[in-house]
Image (cartoon, rainbow, N blue to C red; front, side, top):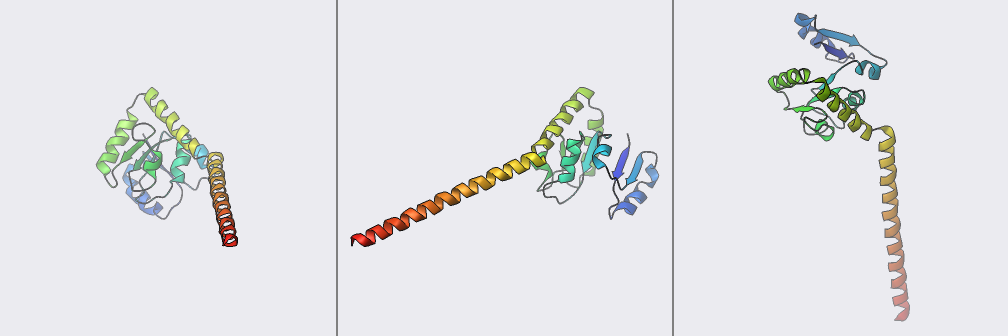
Length: 168
């Protein structure tokens, strides 16, 4: 089992120092121009952020077939991960639980991992550009419809007020 790091973030030097005793199992790739292809080589993806919105990097990893292991923080991972079905959620900061999940995940039968991998890919597809644009288009259409209904109602209310004024 190896631990791969992609990118050159602000914590790179700190991570390299922490991993110096484990150089035989840690690989630092630095900047990758084709992250999706690189992710397809890996089995799992860990997201240990303590703050997220919609975790796009997590969805990219899921789309590449990486099964996610993520901290169950207030927003983000739990919106896309169903624990035990398309990935795993771990209590934030609980390193022992994170270690247990990694060891458990690496010992699962290939058939079970493949089932989870396919579920992760399916989840990521729900957030594809095509699907998100389609949802946005539907949202805009619904908003326009509500606005048209409101404007129509206001028009008829004003018309009724004018008619009532004329009747006086």
